[in-house]
Length: 201
Image 1 (tube, rainbow, N blue to C red):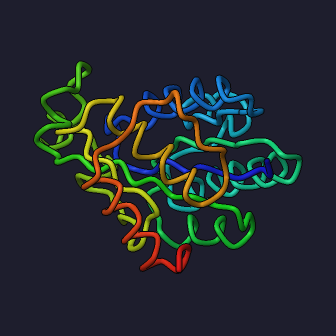
Image 2: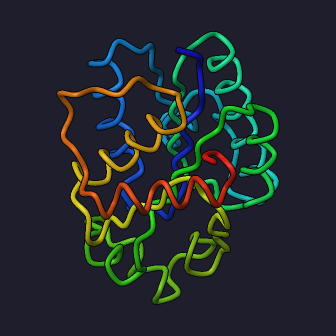
């Protein structure tokens, strides 16, 4: 199979890393070469020293995109899990990589605040933390993502199967008869979205 990039975007706590790991396990089970670039891990290593200004955030996301492009060119399934708040930079990476599948992890702020064990959302909402993405710093949701998962009402398994079925229909991974199946309604919804985006006739 040819390489591709699966790009998870969404607010902090929306389930990007958890889903990335779940999809990684399934792709490995199917025999694919996979690498995850997690936003927090990248900042500790590849982007050490960068702050959280718009310029630094853009540099960070461009670096992740550059590495994903190298991996995808070498027949690796590259999985990026980073907030990546700005639409223009995500679209820039889409153009660079080509084989790019965007997954928007959608979750309401009130749910994110409830599940946030560190209490960062509550502090940001109270004005105690400045520059917090989604509260007083912008987050620009994708306009036409290939996949939207709703982590406030879908299980990890349900979201994972939705992503995998999308990758199957796009021809990036082979279908697996042993994998858990999605409902006929979800199958129809995925096909309609991919047709709208021009992937299916």
